Image 1: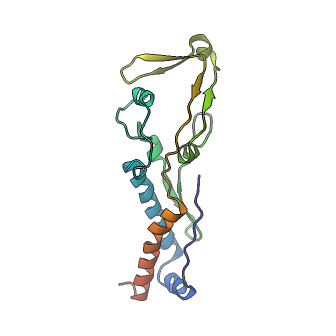
Image 2: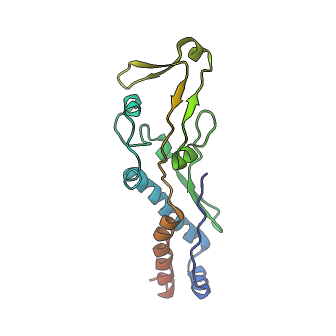
Length: 182
């Protein structure tokens, strides 16, 4: 999974109090859930307004309609999970891959340069590359396609965004620990 390494500076005395009051598993579960919520919000808000709109050609090929990037079928969005070992890490990401085994998370987080979709396979050699539109018609593309590339549409937080989300969470847990859990 694409990951972001992050550290939050906590005074040692506060950390000892926190660890006495709250188990590492509980802290990591909350951190994982907060990061998953960040990802979910990224999909709801088109990357907090930062995702490039879909190209007209992409809109024509959508099977379920709509113009929300990365959400035609919902498979990619639904593939994000949170994992933890309950002791040392919390991770949010996706292991979803293309048919060729390439990480969709990496493609969409960072985008791609332009690339060629080659002519291979018996149906491509015979008919060229074609795609079915939502209306049921077929669009021929020829024997190979020079794709302009996929723009970056990051769903994961940057290190700064993660810190901004998680710092109040950890501080709140510390505050509750100082107050005896109330």
